[in-house]
Length: 131
Image (tube, rainbow, N blue to C red; front, side):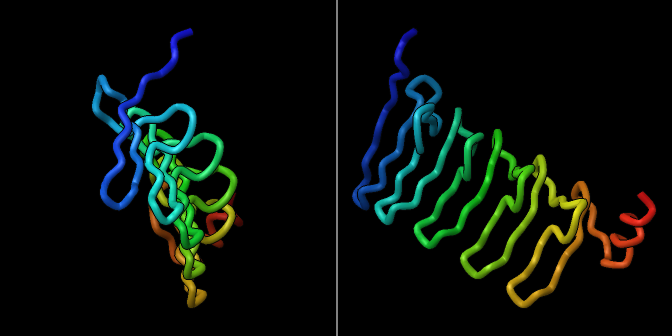
């Protein structure tokens, strides 16, 4: 088995980026492809945000985003968790949560989405009862 070879760049802000030298796209099979000087990390595979074992973006303020093959996606919880408490549920790149709100804003406002289509709370509740 041959070892993956990367082109690594460190800029003036001490941000480290790993690239696939053949495609010149962000890529690292064994860890983050971008490590920011403030501790943030981004996982990329062949030029697309991607991490099957956790968030693909982890910011230094604790924010997290889950991406698979370049699409926001998390089957086990919110795909985006913002530092202000907002949570967003995404599945295959579309806002989606068939068990509750797909977005919960920090002021308590809720948005209901299924497969990228927005529903009012009453439409959503009716859909749940019907199914």
